Image (cartoon, rainbow, N blue to C red; front, side):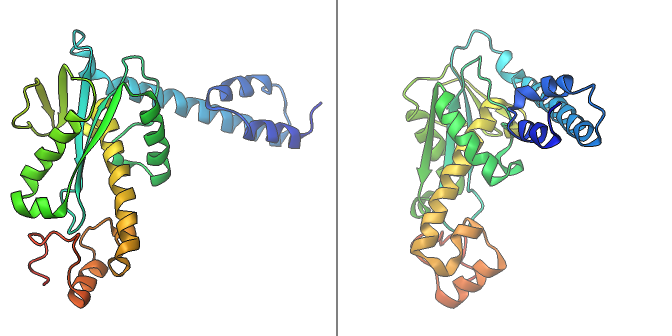
Length: 251
């Protein structure tokens, strides 16, 4: 009979799809330590099945257009911050895509977003971002800059989508059929993937800007108007990455 320590090591090395088999293999072992491991394995197996069902539901919108070969999700991040760019993501997933845990990027931990970014980059048919600077945002306003970022993301895909699924908006000056979906990043897997790609891209950019302009804490606040950020603007004034049209009350 295996020692409990050996079984525990085996449990800790399991891949996601192996928990159910582990629980079945040790179901007859009545030792308390093994029983506890089996309970944990069954819970993880159940959670995995629930996640697969959730992901299957996220394909609902994409399945409504079976004749469209390339369905592209569009989302943006960074409309509200006082500093930094607005970034749009565009993502076309293969119809047999098996990536789990895609969701509205705001509902995911940084660690999970980073993992999913790599998975999406590796498995997507095409993925792209559009980045519009703080200076350009001041020139044309944040809504127009967001549209510009979305158009740039679409242009960078390398393939032409048959359909765009957008998070809430209809993008002007785009000659591709569009479907705006309210809270689409939590309802469509394509939009969710675009959301994650845009969020990770922008967060990485803001961490780099935090090194250039350390007094503002960009690496922590991502340019949003936290109390500490506002205090820094009042003390040091704005930097070139600040959106002047957003911070006129503080300078």
